[in-house]
Length: 209
Image (cartoon, rainbow, N blue to C red; front, side, top):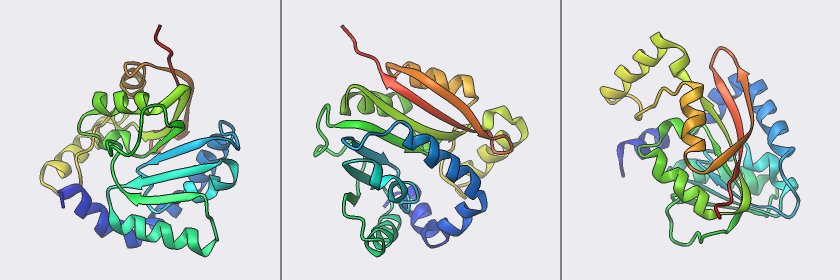
């Protein structure tokens, strides 16, 4: 078990309570995401945590494959889905590089609060592009702490001493460039929370001829 997985396992039991302090942002994310979904969609929720978003959009799609590196997060997500009798979500502890996920398998990939935690952003962007069907979508929300210099420095220091996972302090322009460089066309960008600089982005896979 790596350091990041241990961190999120430790966070799992308190995760929902902490996230509900920002409940209005989650409501916005869910509302905006639903606008891009179709009932025929096969969705990958990459970094699903405790299923806060997957459970809310399950009625809007055909099936969701929801994955997270933390087994504790997955246990909680499954329990919540079972309690609501949601049957079209497959929760599993896995990574986006799991070989069971084949090229062109998904209509939509959700990446909420994970792009700033990646060790190799270009590699993951390439993998997401491969997994999406033609003109498939990635939908994300990412805190861009690079817009706040002091906080960016503080997070870097705390990460270096091992208290939290490695965090990349994006500026919004850098985040958009990372997505565009992965052969995606951005179709919407909106800051959902000014204090946290949390940016919602929807982007479409570019067809390369």
